[in-house]
Amino acid sequence: MPANTPSLLGLSTIVWGTKYAAADMVVQSTGLTGAIIESIAITPKNAAPIAEIENGGGAAIVEVLLDDGFDAKVTCLYDTAKTWPAIGSAITLKVPSYAGGIGDATDGTDFACYVAGNHEISLARKKEATITLNIRYRPGV
Image (tube, rainbow, N blue to C red; front, side):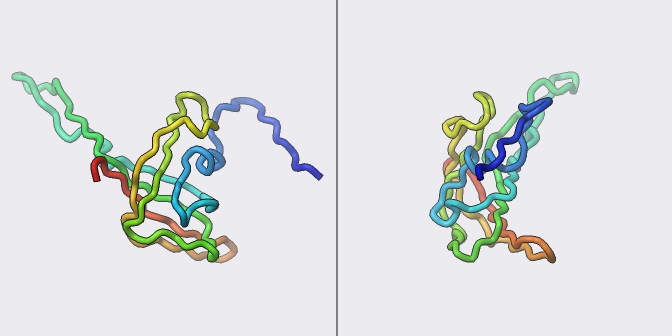
């Protein structure tokens, strides 16, 4: 029996779940290929301006912005059949731009990242075990 196809009603342009994380926000690595992604969170290293330059009257006239990378946390269901990447492993993270419409695997930017720290393992009652990889992107590194 074929699976049911959902009918989207109302505002159908809202991004829902991690369906597109698995397709567009592809975490490309030998150990992560085919992993079931629960969530991906990206935090810019410097989300706020790093400096303000004032004019003679003390009012800010220039803000200095710095785009120097991000830290990401990728949480997957823990699969004992996978060999998870070690600290320092190279990973390519495709971040979708959402400009051209979601769902296009070519829509986005590839970032050459690396695993920056030990994995976080979460075990809980009546819930799947999860593993969270700490991933870091720094331009030029």
